[in-house]
Image (cartoon, rainbow, N blue to C red; front, side, top):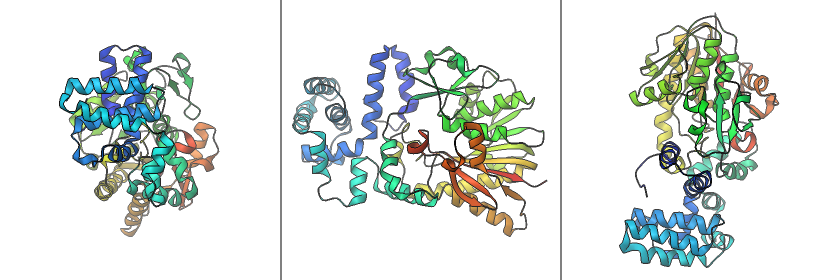
Length: 439
């Protein structure tokens, strides 16, 4: 069992591919892994009562085994005896001295139904703590998401639906790169929002030939919509840029769209490893160049610029469930400083009449509305009142055929920002602001 600091959505597909599991076993392993991570806070509360120990006093390997066992016992249709015997067997191979302890704790867990455990672990909790335990989100994240709903103009009563959506298994999304393949040629069901996407049943998307050869990319439709919105906006002819391109999903869509307009895309990232991922993502496109460069050093001028900034990832908890445990409120402070610098650099590098798309995979108000507002305020204050906020929800509506109001965030200077939500759009929670530079 892995205990190192790595994201499951990056490690698990490769491991499944190497083991050549059948579809049924791969699906079980995927649910066991992601399901355990999604509900970890709840399982930890149960384990603390069942073991009479704080989880930070339990060694990592037996704790991981108990979390996996608890998920099978409380959230999967695995017979209790099978969940117990298989989990203990794994522990005997890796940490034999703790097998008896793990067995005893899991037996106690199996003696009560999930609803009984939920009542026990939330018996003395206030509303925020109850939601945090029941839906396995840190309390600060629960508060931040509540504030985000209100800040983006939605009803705070949607909070529980949003938390539930974060824990709902997300199907594997695949995007057909425009000009290289039509989505009708891909297996799976067409995505309801993205006109170039499908959802797959398989847990191993690399088994799809078009994914393996680079004509299609594994991608949530929310991410695809960000790239499509920028690609569809009118702008003067010229080179396009992606300033924070790794791992390359949006760059691939932009690059394919740029090829259709006989132009090039320059993709940058500050990490050599992530640039390698961009090169792999765009290997089927000859008009994309990828290089190691800090997006804050963008030179331009570029006709269209995507600045998909590093963020907390609170909009992608369906796919990266462990991100909720890896972030802290202090991270937001450091991230927003970088986000402002990247957006300011993008606006400087944009050609007159060109368009900048600022996006994050987070609805956090400080990473979204406040970043764009502050950068535009400082630009105006310095005498450069040259940026027009476009109607981003309308741009998304034109692509998806969905009512623009479902994407609406706040209104600024005659335009609007946009926010996607897992519980509304069944996509990652992408924020998008389309900004045009004056000619």
